[in-house]
Structures are given as C-alpha cells and as structure tokens.
Length: 109
Image (tube, rainbow, N blue to C red; front, top):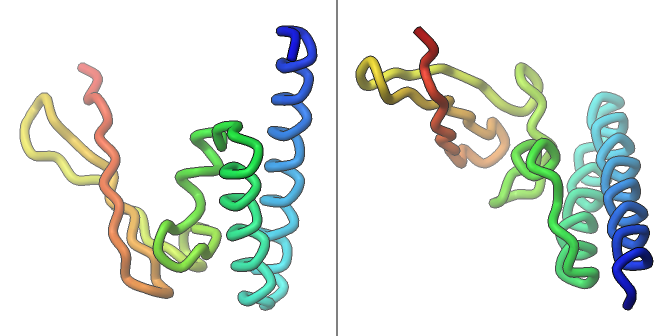
C-alpha cells in the first residue's frame, strides 16, 4: 500500500476502535456486561487482524484477563502508590477478575 492509503487505513481502524469502545462502555453502564466483554474482545481481535495498534488510552481501559472495560468505580479501582521521590506508579485493579496493572508515572517537583 502506498503511504497515503496506509495512513487513511490506520485512521479508519482507529476510529472504529473508538466507536466500538464507546459502545462497550455504554452497554456496561446499562448493565450488559457480557456484551461489553464481547465488544472489547472484538477490539483485540480486530487489532490482530489489521495489525494496527490499539491507542494507549483504549488499551489501558480494557482488562487483559477478562476483556472487561475498566471504568473507575464501576469495574476497577485506581490507586496511586509511591516508592520514593523519583518512582511512583498507578495501580489499577479489575473488580471482575482481580487482575492488577501497575503503570509508572513521573513525580513532578
């Protein structure tokens, strides 16, 4: 594919990721957890098929273990931990399966 076509293709796939993720969040808020999981699993499957990376915001909002959308307070808990002045991380725990994620961040002075 030419470069211009490839960039359009990636943009279309990323737009589809966002649309499907919004549908998953809406269905989860309505109470249909199973449909939300299927939609998130579809996003992962689509990423494998198209070989276009999932944006970081969406990728960090889907549980790797049970494919549930991670919404703070509804399906996940978020805490900030600090080890020292330099190193700190955000701990996200999935309420559905108990899977734990740790994402480092920089402490500003």
